Length: 181
Image (cartoon, rainbow, N blue to C red; front, side, top):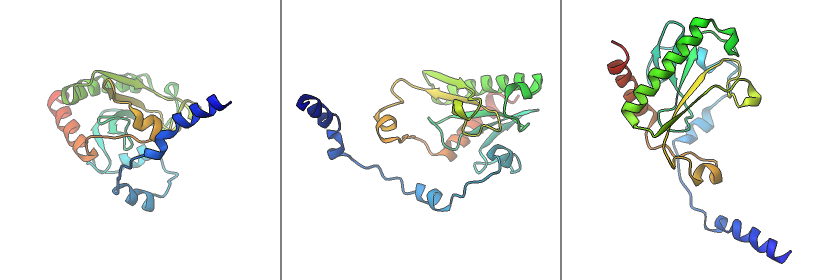
């Protein structure tokens, strides 16, 4: 029993030496955020494209938008205009366009960030991890070896090296140069 207790104390000993990372810009969100019943994707579609709504590109039935709470810099989503919860509720054209927009996004992100890999995926339903289960969307996440470090697993915190407005500018400019011809 004493040996097990010793292991427990050693494994949590880091708590006594914890350092802090200050992010005072988050306080504005914490103090002023009111959960909305409105769909954030549908709401973004109503606004003019800018670093405010984070829409990079609008296609025929799908748009590309930055994730406001990204896993890594450059995390974008291909989202259909149709507010539906599943792939089968989309038209075949919308499903095909989602894949084409995701493919183009990987090209743009490769040009800007030179990631070592990508996570691409759809979380269908709340149980699968969909944060916005009522509006299907396709995540495109650039990845690097070592980009998941102790901060996420121990502190539940992500460290992003680039401001989201700068990410928006870079992706939108590169999209216009590489994809829109």
